[in-house]
Amino acid sequence: MIIKTLSAGLLLMSLGACSLAPGPYLDRDRLDQTVEPTYASLKYPVKPIDIAYFAQERAAAQPSKCPLTCLTKEERNNYSYKVGINDQLTIIVWDHPELTGGGGGFGNSGGGGNTPAPLPQGNAGNSAALSPASGGITSSVGGVEGGLVVRVANNGTIFFPRVGRVKVLGMTAEQIQHVLTQRISKEIKNPQLDVRVSGFNSQVIQMTGNVRSPAAESITDLPLSVVDAINRAGGALADADLQNVGITRDGKRYLVDVAALLETGDPQQNVILQDGDIVDVPDRSNSRVFVLGEVVRPTSLPMNRGKLSLADALTGANGIDVKTGDPRFIYVVRGAFNPALAPITQPAGAVPVSAKPNLKDSALVPLVYRLDMTQVDAIMLMTRFELQPRDVVYVQVASSARFNRFLEQLTPTIQTIFFTKELVHP
Image 1: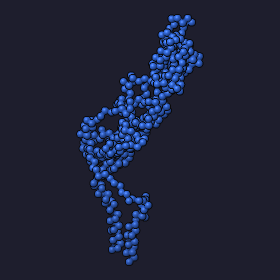
Image 2: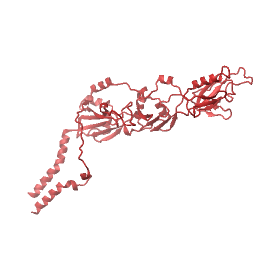
Image 3: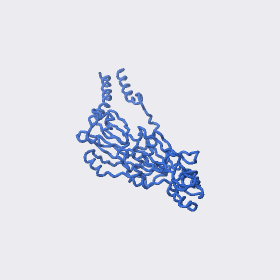
Image 4: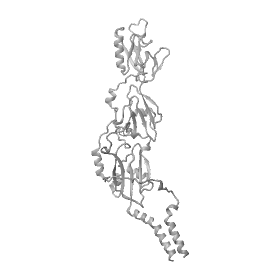
């Protein structure tokens, strides 16, 4: 009788083992689970990773498009700097030093047959400092360059002797030269006048993120591209994600693939920056690939300059678990933008569609690819299958492993019933 009572007690304790067993446990009595999750009943096609897949990818490949205005030979030739507020101009009137503070082109006191001093060599954007002796500026190549240094006032004008106030805002140096020449020709016959921008203070961009020296950078008489801005900031850091460099302009953020520009020379990614642009170089935290399923070490792997192959991902997870993984079913699940499911209107402040869709704010559907590693060509092709950020690589469990796991879960219950029966009926 004592044995039967003891066995019955053990049986009851085994039924309530879930509440007494150690380990993490969440009390579901305080959770309202009346709303069950719903899943779409759609079936998604699986694309095999084979030779035909790469042939289709090559046929469907489209040339890249510049999200804004990119630096090409035509754009470089057509570029001209527009003068803005607080810019510094250097103006020289040859043979008339009284107009430009003792500047170039004066020799003997008679002034006849004077030979103008040569212009300094170099770009107009070279740094210059005020010369207290002559009122001119000291050229970066040495010597003193004569000329009147003026600054563009807040109303967009400059003052020049015998001319007065002149509106120069938004004009190029050549246009300012033409206007001043016309106006001063009323006082001087055939004036020879030169205008250059010697201080670029009106147009700046902000450089932030994973660069060595983030700071504001001035736009000069040479077009400033996104690669130039990164180089000025000392270059990108080791963990920078150059595949997803952001350019914020007028409240909208555009993505630029600087990695493709550096690796393939794609000119459609070298965006020309404008005044007020914010360039941010993110880290690689968002450019990761997740390897799950029957692998030795499930993990997330950062992409190296936007590149990571399927072979790299499986190697980073220490390979497939040979005991439980099925090498015939290696899946790559990728979130793709589906414009048919996107909302008709976007909320205020939404990020616009740029070179790459913003997957956070768009309607997503899964694209599924499958690799069969039992095929000899698949082992070669997996090294050429390039993953994208936030791809999920999943290795399917083998049918035998699922059966063995079922037995592992069932074995303790069978053992409990067996020993209970032995105690009751020895």
